[in-house]
Image 1: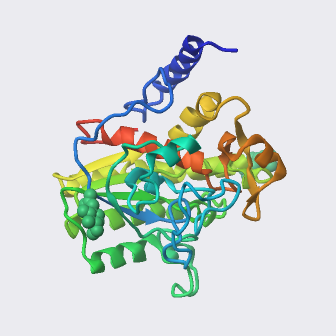
Image 2 (image 1 turned 45 degrees about the vertical axis):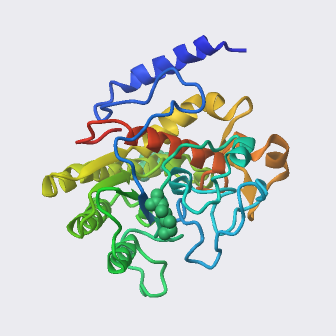
Length: 343
Ligand SMILES: *[C@@H]1O[C@H](CO)[C@@H](O)[C@H](O)[C@H]1NC(C)=O
Ligand SMILES: *[C@@H]1O[C@H](CO)[C@@H](O)[C@H](O)[C@H]1NC(C)=O
């Protein structure tokens, strides 16, 4: 068995190697113990507004109202209205609905801890969305899932909460990668970044001040891509992310008093969480396979325990992973000054 100090050494080496990547201006703490060290964001956020797709959708818009609680939900089953077996990362971050305020129940799952933002969540994310239906030429936007563009319009129309204490979280949709159909089409890739940029600018013009833009996660490592050409997919992710990395700086250039963070999901998922899987998930961690099939954990996953799995299904995280990503995001928010990309 590896000693903790040995693990720290391994992690340090991994992170040291990453420091040579030019896009990484700041990495996460090296010597990890779970949970990620609690830190306090400089801004006491009271509201989180989320835009995106099924990585964040809590079912509020699709009829699957959030009725189950962390304490009563079955970790081997799809959690009401979500593409996961538990709350999504913005829920772990915001902790709005009272679902997860029971620290003892949360602690019992090992996936949540008290003390993330005590904020209300307005979750606009819609499963199946892409940033802009038009990018991929979906024929009938009224029948397509609500795009991020439409989500932003609806949020502005409904009236945005207090600027100073509201955090806007954008987490790009898987459809923004799969919609490209592995074409490596630079125009479409640029359109994805432009779409997120315009969405953030629209919120900023309506008074929004604090923004997180997550980049695309490493879709090429998702279980459902096992039989695809993963090299092409990886290039697609990298190309889309190259555009997304530049977005927060562009928003800041237009709105100098805004605060912007980048959450580099390739770094977070692949280089941080996957690279240290045993540390985060425990011995027997599975970062390759989907836990579930058809909304229920497979026998193998039930036997091992879903919290050992990174992927709930073909391309969505388990509640355990959502919890980790929320903790990383919370950590990022505590880092000041935050005038540029923090990845
Ligand atoms: C969240 O919303 C509820 C209901 O409107 C309100 O009572 C509460 O104060 C809000 N919480 C925060 C942190 O603003
Ligand atoms: C994946 O696609 C690339 C680019 O088309 C090609 O060069 C490579 O051989 C493909 N790899 C596999 C395993 O098919």
